[in-house]
Image (cartoon, rainbow, N blue to C red):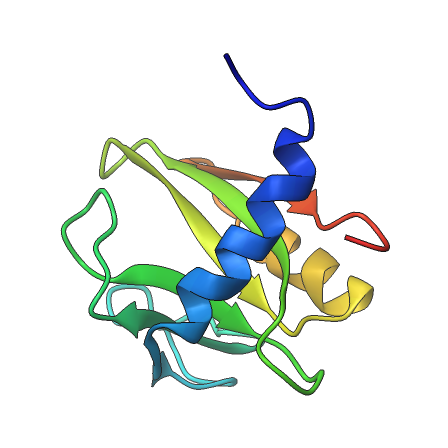
Length: 122
């Protein structure tokens, strides 16, 4: 049986997941995408060292300007070129930063992203 408060249960798990890993920023804000240099990263982008995503690399993260390591949202991303889908954790992002990240994941015809924001008070 699935617990009744699944969304409320997810966010503390996400925070613990991030707290147990080292954040590696391999694409700093303002840097170009390695394969598509015309695409610029609007915020720091990287991964959690010692974790594994569906693509075999570390779990991807975006880091915003708020203090701390709280997960403020998640991007569910689908890529038709790579034929994959994955979650990207948004760490310490403001509402405005999350909208910028969402736009980043929807700027090409072959990728799409959906934003799941952490509810207030959770």
